[in-house]
Image 1 (cartoon, rainbow, N blue to C red):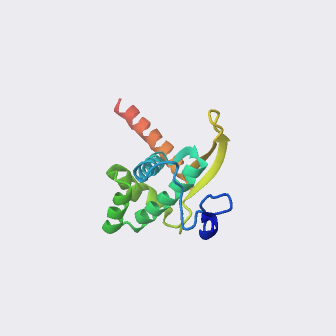
Image 2: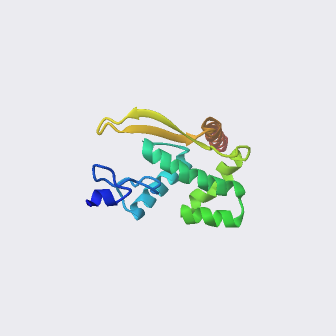
Image 3: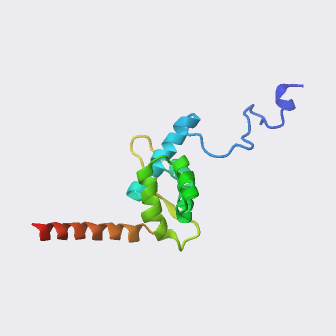
Length: 156
């Protein structure tokens, strides 16, 4: 009996079927993939909005929403778990003090992926990964900048 016929999870063409394989590999090994996703999530929490490929945005969304849920809990154990996934104390502090309190009324679905354009160099589909309440978060930043400018004018 040929090898193709003996194996149950091999198609007619001889390629293996991806049973019980979840997530995307991005053509990288595990450490590189973790570093990529950590970098994307760090940039997301820092700038509240990033543009990347659609596949990377969807994977980063999974990790980011998991960390945001820890931020909503707010206790020490949740903070340590978040730090184990994203080892950047400044970003985790910003998440726990500024971002998560604004999302307390939302049970899930903190982020959205919006397909934006096609990249010129390699024709890959790009998407914007942003917070659902992005507009309300950004307005407050602009108000803070105005307050800082007013304070500087008063001092001068």
